[in-house]
Length: 245
Image (cartoon, rainbow, N blue to C red; front, top):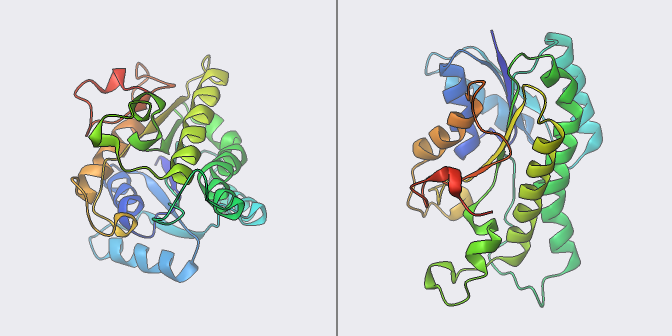
């Protein structure tokens, strides 16, 4: 049985991704910062008939927590096939490039960038043991430098500088990781799940959780001829292979 780790998987998009991967036959480790929430999420999926899951208490901002989860999963398997770096925070609705505090920037980057790098590096050895390792970093169209350089486009009037900066940094990390792994079986991509109706957006949005989950899982299941080092945003672009970073 293939295995996968999904961070931030106790609710919303992460929970949907975990459910879909379990339905595809993966044994899924659900990362949750709060252990009780992770256990409740597994029970919720168990009620759907899915038993190939386990909760792991994972705070991506805590190196000790990352290493503890790496050790725990390593005791159960020598191979990890998929890593979905889904855990992320927005930094709040009030953000300004001129007035945001350094604490705001640090907190958001700690989860959205440093947490992704820390988890990815910790699990690279288990992923390298897979014949088809896949890493999906959950990004956003709001991270596109190309789109947000268009100051006159009202479609991009909503701006969250702290959050956007973190996700743009995540995109660059994704590109460089894919570059370093380009001569291996790894596929490393960034995926925007769309403007999704979850707690993160106040349950507003143009995409359902189910739609968002399918967009992410699609790239976790890429075949050997699939792309790597790309950014995909299928809600906003009809030709995702040409999405602007």
